[in-house]
Length: 363
Image (cartoon, rainbow, N blue to C red; front, side, top):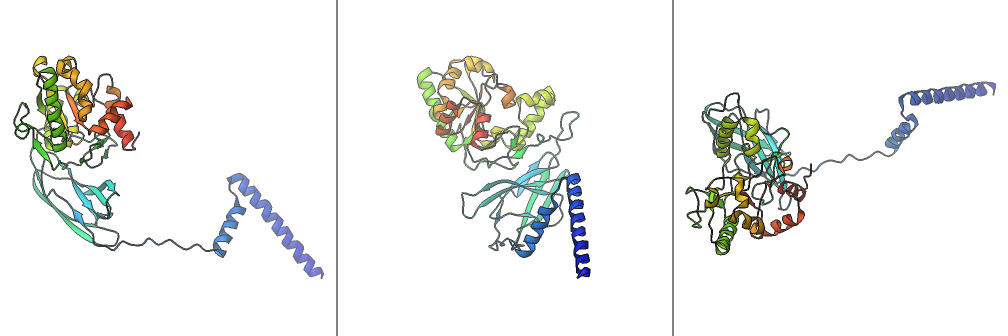
């Protein structure tokens, strides 16, 4: 009996000392050992089943439309469209970035930017495999031709804006394209039409292109403008490809320096003109020049009052440079659709702010 009592007392002392030790440790470390012990015991008594992700074994489908591309610097990006999540198989100097997930389709559509890097002058044949989680693969082949291009003194390449992301696919009339969001380099609308030849509109050169819907409403707007004011405008610019914007931006840097150029010209990939829904206007009253005096012209005043009715809005208004990132451009108008333009006008925001809200991407 005495032996049993001794053992019991020893056990009680051990329990007491253990409790004191645990209390001291928990006080110092800020932990709760008792709760952790309870959780451990619960996990032993009630083991949780591991959730095993079910692999999608349906066939992998990957589309891409750029098989040959000409570039001016050592990297570019092309669009891949997949029915599943994919990655590059194995080690590669190239990279794959998810630009958009379109869940409105069945199956889903994953839009990727395949970033092709470290391309030297001349031709390069890029071949790589992309693979899904089930191990299905697809081979991608792109011929890249890098031409020599002389950048302004001190520039090795035209860099993307820091911390920028890829935007939604450019076919969306509300696509975000600004200093935070860029298009994939090879993006080009599939429904471009010639404003001079197809619509008989006044242009200062013969190959100014615009997407069909934007061109239809532009033609209607300029017809009504003439009926009311008796004046015509000349279209100085429309769709501009990535490589055209590259050359234009470099020329502005050469003239003004990069800091000043960034106030008036978009870096390649960051230009709204690549969307194919933007036009620049000039007219005789202001000397057929790209000038902010356009605001005070007969044509400019009419557009400021009425362009939204035709789906056109002014992205870079006066006094909003700290928001838009660009100086005022009275001549630069973007088509976003009639219903969207009405909603935008009621908001009182800049187009950049309104598009960020519409895309749920508020900084």
